[in-house]
Length: 317
Image (cartoon, rainbow, N blue to C red):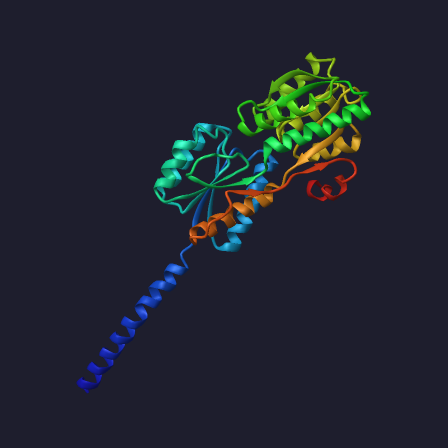
């Protein structure tokens, strides 16, 4: 009896020894990736859409996603990256306010083995494996050409353009500067005042109101981001200036859709932030598997006018 029991125990040990590596391997294969998504804010629909895309892709891929609101504060974003690095996450999705100020924290993360990708704002450094988003410089220039053509064909070739920007935002400065260079190809175009909405809704509204009231000679406004465009819509309506000013800007919202229906918002550069979030998670999954990804994953923009606005309306009901 003892001999049989001893034989059975030896057999079990042999089986356990043989199975043990398989079990450990299976457990390792099932380990979920942990990813931190550092956003600029959770106020604008644009950043919430990045979050939605990343969240859906993470759930599909079995990735643990931690979302951090930067509250429009570059220092808070640096602290977030440092905390994620200390937590030993596998990856970081960076939507940077200050692409230079965030660099040391991202470099430290990469040295610790964290895979880093940038979304929306390009961070140029070897520590960042991919940029997912829009070529903001090119899109700004192309939109400048678009507005210039409108001025030539609809406004008799003359326009004084006021700008509502976010001067603390690298990408919105790209959109502004390249737009200005392109639109000034039209001889009758001059650039008026530029106001700073800082990419914060309340400040963008106040800046828009100041621009409209202090510049009665402008007949075109260009808004470089969602808060600025929403602020411009509200300011033009409040000041009764929707007849004298034509509006152009970035990123649709409910307010923008109504303004286009009302006829004073002429064109919008529409991005696809949801897809940017999806592509960011997919890139980190590939990087974690040792697969290289393209250093620039382009998510194209589309210029929205009255001719194609209907296909976008369902998202803003």
